[in-house]
Length: 329
Image (tube, rainbow, N blue to C red):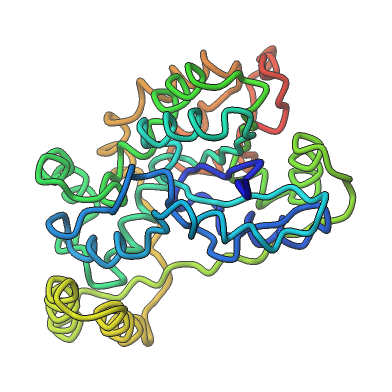
């Protein structure tokens, strides 16, 4: 069977694309040519209708047939470890079950990003594509319950995707902790050589071969102008009509409108402390639970800025290292 030996399972908007590209440069590793096949997200064909704007086009990207999924790894040279990266596996409990049933020995890599920053980047991604109808990040988070009830896809679950302790608790019911490597997003960005060496050691391949991760593009943030509103309305209409178009025609139309929206757009706007305070109540209890689960310090995520004090993840005096043997978090 040509199945993966390891998976990068989350979280979305936390550097999984960059890590996938970095690991692909290691001669002992083979990364799937489709970075995000989403195979374990369904037991068969993905949904064909419903959901939020653009969901149908995303569902069409699923590599859901077993033969097609195995074909992704058929080109792996003998002796290499095969991997893929679908950042929704961490969030999806059914995906965790499917992985445990098919490849119970698989190793998994989890990247954790400040959950408020992650949610904001997620919202900006959909806003810049013209798909997010709510122009205010905090108000969009407040609509999450209604969207989930209406069947919108997980990428719209802005705060739920950042409740990492809940997700890891369930993952550890399925897999022993030694099969899970937890890494902070900022560690990957700030000290990539150390982070990559730790990952290579976890996977059992030679260290010191890869030392950099590709620079991530900052998502553009188009202003809410009359032009934006008009094109975004077209983008949502194209997304809705896309399910009736053959092949990738709907996706191509949506992407052309997205490129138009992002022309001359500014960078993602930094979060204000007021915005963070409004969103943190969705997440604070899970952040404290994550500290208990991992033995690591995540109190900086409760501060006004992601890099409070200039040092990400700085521990107060006397704070212990992680109990799960993974010092990079």
